[in-house]
View 1 (cartoon, rainbow, N blue to C red):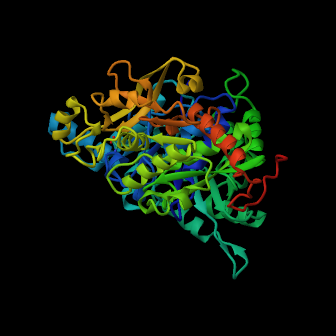
View 2: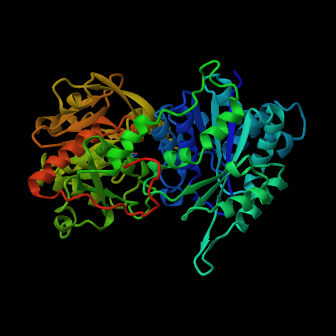
View 3: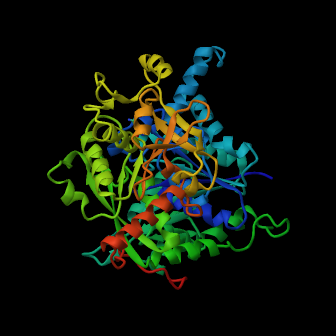
Length: 564
Ligand code: GLN
């Protein structure tokens, strides 16, 4: 069966939500029984976002196979409940790197290597790659940036060529644009959309559907105008209104008929082979959404981190909190606490009113002492504590300093001279690190100790989790922490490196060297997040910290089709 390709482009401005649109469309199609994957092409020169500052680009999302990718892949996995891989995120930097290394190997047989055809061919190769595995009926490809950007042009040319080669039955172009509302005129304006469609046409691309982002419902008149001036049928003008929650978007789009638009084009004879059902079965999604929108109570949890001012920097963690609370009808209100500003004088006022503390991952020494202080506060006051990656490392440093009495204990990432390097590079890594450094990336095994808290939470002996770090718990000094009551409940069976630590005499005190936030999906919130949120909820009840549910921060037009 021929794989079908949907290309998603954006016009007018960035940040229109192409990622959420792609994830939602993917979900609508997979709920009709189709196998779908989503990939993102980013037109920047970085080979991957691994080295980019989270302020610049938001969180770096890590896949099972260890690719450092764009945070939109997190949305794809959470919405589709399916893992992605390196092949799902390609940048201009990677494309050029491949072409240049082929050129060095002499693969182009002495030809002049050019944007057309070599770069375009390489882009096309990556666009088709996942489709060629025959694992997918539909591949959705999101193109980063905005139509009209210089760096996006090769991608539009690649789509134009593929469209010709594969034909309109097998390809579709969805163009997202903004329909601004001018308050003074009291009108929705279509001109920016017309211009951005002209820009696409100049590259030889006629969109098949125009998805209008707008804060107000678009009128029949506006639909007619867009249809007339942008050469699409009226039914193909889809509105995507601002929603209270991103998880409402699949339903908003279903009501607009985008699913029919796609399957009528790709599978006009559907039903004959039972491959694609006539309607999506969204019952699970609707059940989830009802619980999400009708929580029983709200509990405050602190997220202590370096980049808290940037809302996208901890995207997977905040989504993991939301999704972990839903099955228990608990709404988590994240209190963002900048670790740099935490000091012994204000720790009580900053962290005294929360039902749990999560210390975030991070690199570099800014704010590390604040994270160590947060771990100390949690341990001493017995507040539920969850440390992720650097968060685990800080909990261990704190324990070494204040329980083992090892003054100045530290990670050699921050203090190379410390007498107690409880967090350190492994010998093998030290050698590699001299040559430019490398990280432990992607999925590794973790064996769980029987009778430990972690074992109970997972209900398994062995699990696999995703990593992104250089430093490890120092196995030479581990004995002392163990003697003082710390439990290393998860270790890597091949290397004996620590994966999970816990303090069994506390109500919930656990740190993980890996990143559970990358494995949370709508259908499967991560068990550690679920257990942590539950512990925080009981603590909130004891301490009187739970409140009645708070109205959503974003006000939007209510969902019409589902009674919430
Ligand atoms: N900086 C630490 C390390 O490299 C922690 C990394 C992280 O939190 N992801 O080991």
